[in-house]
Length: 447
Image 1 (tube, rainbow, N blue to C red):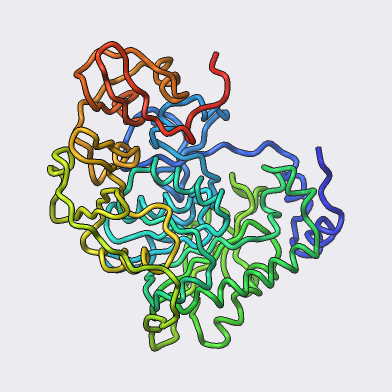
Image 2: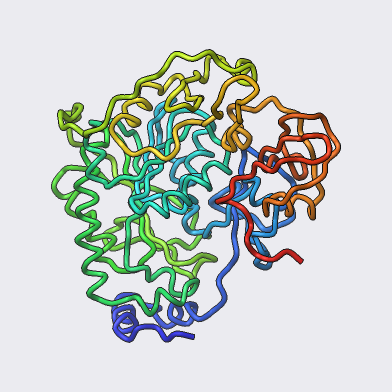
């Protein structure tokens, strides 16, 4: 096992009264936890221990091979560290508008974004952003699995959001940090830690906060979090915002039995792994007090505004046109997008790099129309196709991209496991063409 960095150990001994207990806990096995998807309910984890601060959270007795579980690919649950699930408790505590516009700024791989989508329950809009493109693609995959239609995935820097004006009611900033809270779960993070890197994180965090602040509405909330114990990256990072009157601290109350620890000056909360069944996690909630709100920026982006071509809807998608979602044709693909936040959605599509916008339904005309994987996975925009249920072994073969034999009607079908959709197939009678996306296919060996 990689030893804990000496300078980290020395600082923790000065910082925390029961430092020995914390340092000892970092050499113990990590708990395994998942969060269930309320959009795709299933009873498979009913007997597992519940996480007190997250009704859909569960502790597992041992870590399964998630890649070999079809329900994971169906979006029935998401493996997530229990401490980060406090986002769920925060969202139940604060008051947001009926259709809030929310941003998860540093969202990959997507655990906290799925918490937000579960809380929104189909209302409002979530913009999930990730600056690193390959991580943004992983984020998109995980949010497609989750199945919520009121979501946009973007691939932008924090400063780019200033072009939108003050549009967000809630911003989750899980800031890039020195990663001390992951020392137990990820040994590699021990080797990458340095005081110099922590200092760099402090500067970067401040820049991100400054860049995103104009995008928050007056009276809107910012949930700032890290997975580190470093006060410079935590309490001291947000202290000035309060002292300068730019924000006020949102007071939160938690049951004593949860064993949370308040930060210095009661600025935020810590999850310590020697006190709780979590990794290391810090969070604090700010309410923006600055006004007036910032209007749209006049800065040109070099992008063309969204231009929808008028196109008749294929018969396959005519049945889903209703008041909550509207259908749009853009760059040879059909999309469904929540009507109540459509103007905000168009603004974001115009100004930012979007990797996912609402629900992509598919493209083509007549018999050549090919439904998109996003549509099959979506809950709020259900695809009206025959469903073919597979056993576990055959479902894994489908997820590997193999051709399989099925009994069912010819044409497009939804392939499922335990009634949970995995994706599309096209039944030709003697065989089924597998339309599970190549980039998502299982690559590991199946026994």
